[in-house]
Amino acid sequence: MLPPTFDTSTPLATVLLWPALPDVLRRALTRAVPRETREHVSVGESVRRWREPMFREWIVGLLALDVGVGFSDTPTNDDLIGLFANDRLGAPTIAHFFVGPIGAGQGFGAAYRAVSADAPASVCAAAFVYVDAGRVESAFVFLAGATNEPVVQLALRLDDKPFDAAHIERAARAIAAEITPERLDAARDVVREALEECRAVWKLGEGS
Image (cartoon, rainbow, N blue to C red):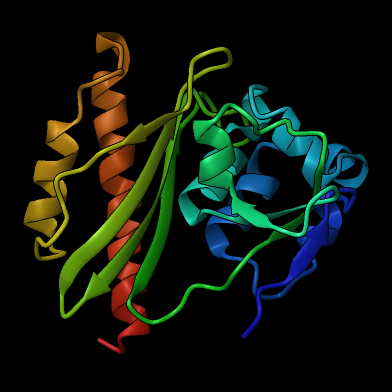
């Protein structure tokens, strides 16, 4: 199944109309992004504005899912992680975004901390995990804090490990690099919860 394509000018409210939009992205758009903003801000603009608190959960979700990107000036495609790594999230030539569904052997999850249910996250994480025969093949985890703090891609020690609660706990406890001490506990909590949601989604997809 080909992933749906959203032009960079597509309003966020239109993205929400896609029935198969992953729950992580749907929550990111409906929790702390006001309805009026969703109706007037496009996908492309939301990515360019990723530093704003209301869009932090959205951007870590897009990054963890490694959304595909097409350009107006070249026939080649890229992915959002590649643009992030090269500090090109605001590239003016982005024309399309490709958002794929969650398949068997995959898990997608996210978590946040905020002062209220509809307030922008003070810290949030999103994770996407590939699992083969019960073991983690690869994991993409992104963490963001308040505005002006960098989005961090975390290297977790999960590859080739069983995808179970014990290894999730060890991975969450091990994060420390590039995380300020004052938010380390909250960061560990949201990473753990994001991975636990990944595990639940993966198990559901496996029929177990």
